[in-house]
Image 1 (spheres, rainbow, N blue to C red):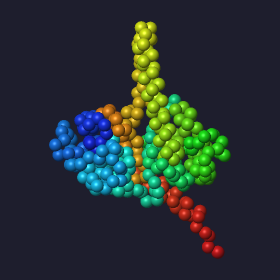
Image 2: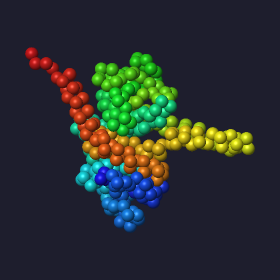
Image 3: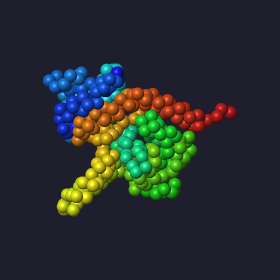
Image 4: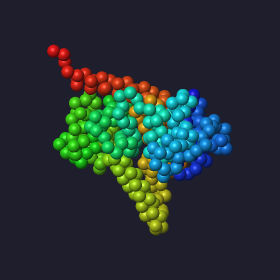
Amino acid sequence: MIRIAVDAMGGDRGPEEFVAGALEARSETVAPVLVGPPDLDTRGLELIEARDVVGMDERPTDAVRTKPDSSLVVACRAVREGKAQAVVSAGNTGAMLAACLLEIRRLAGVRRPAIAVTIPSRDGVSVLLDSGANADARPEDLLQFAHMGAVFAEEILDVRNPEIRLLSIGEEPEKGNQLTLEAHELLAASDLNFAGNTEGRDLLRGGADVVVTDGFTGNVALKLLEGTIRNLLDALREEITATTRGKLGGLLIRPAARRLRNRLDPDTYGGAYLLGLRGLAVIAHGNSSRRAIANAVRLAARGVEHDVVGRLAQRVGNTVLESAATTTPTPT
């Protein structure tokens, strides 16, 4: 059984939604374990007690330090102590990052973990990272993100030899700020399947299997995409329902519209991996529905099944050794 610790007190919709989502994800091979107060109605699921809660508006580092018995921190601790193989939380993202670094800790050789978000596109599915864990990054960080994203694409998206691209303001290698210019050189010299730069306009078309950027740019791009998709779908629905003719036409396109909405809906993927840790962590959206929570639990379980942490440790270890070999002076 794959045990997934679910922070039942994070997010905006209340613990009942998390209990329902965890129940929906329970199967013969997946056992969600709820983390919350002693009086939580788990509806038969196992409970790990946590008597405190980290608010969505609290300062992340302070909250994690002063609330060691909060559901978010206890859920991360469960992974470190072996009580669960992965953690899912829709709580305060900054606090989740801090708790993961404190309790689960980084893989050896990883300087900074990265949030890997699945992006639906016309040509398939790609992964964007970093999507918000690191507002500032170094070129070597982006190279590490690329290696982690490649493992994600191989193990979770079933892509062989994934194509990597760097998010920039133009496809030409000489375009971009200093970070992207230096990262481009490192990626081009690596053994990755690096295909150059891609632009923001290509993300929904399928810019690459893996799109790499710093956390500030990635988070802005992600929220822009989410807002654009949501507003376009809402505007389309309003136009269809505005007139009798539109309503009749809407009946004809309803199946296609439903398929499109399901494909673009963030709830379909449930959450995002925080890659680069010694255990698996999935960060769900703060407004996650029970469907999103169920899919986040399934995503976490899939990562355990495919040994994403072990693959990442091997990949990062190899790149660290290669980097040391190329920088160590040859004895004379």
